[in-house]
Image: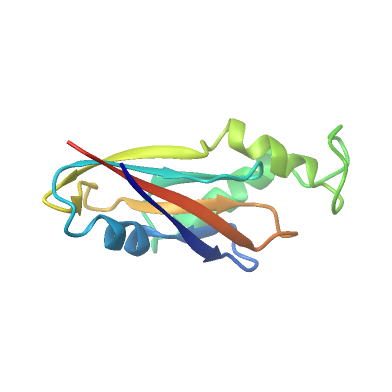
Length: 133
């Protein structure tokens, strides 16, 4: 298996498209599986269409389902930070994508997206690994 860490600066964005960085890692590696893993307790990765409003829809959905308020028992950090720790129960911290001839086998409109509601920590690492098939 080959593996690397990519650095992502999400700033104030809840969603960050990292497809290009993941694809770049897979180039020239042939056939296999690509694992994308976020080693953080407050972020996840997802596959969805970007650039069509889905990013805003995801953000609105998360605000509806996981509002930033004081209902959470987990209370360190900024007010409402407890919801950031619940996020990975809904958006997995990992996913696996098939790779053929060094190309991610994504659907036409699929992108690999980091989802991170934790504005306290805008710098993230994502572990990208390749298992030859």
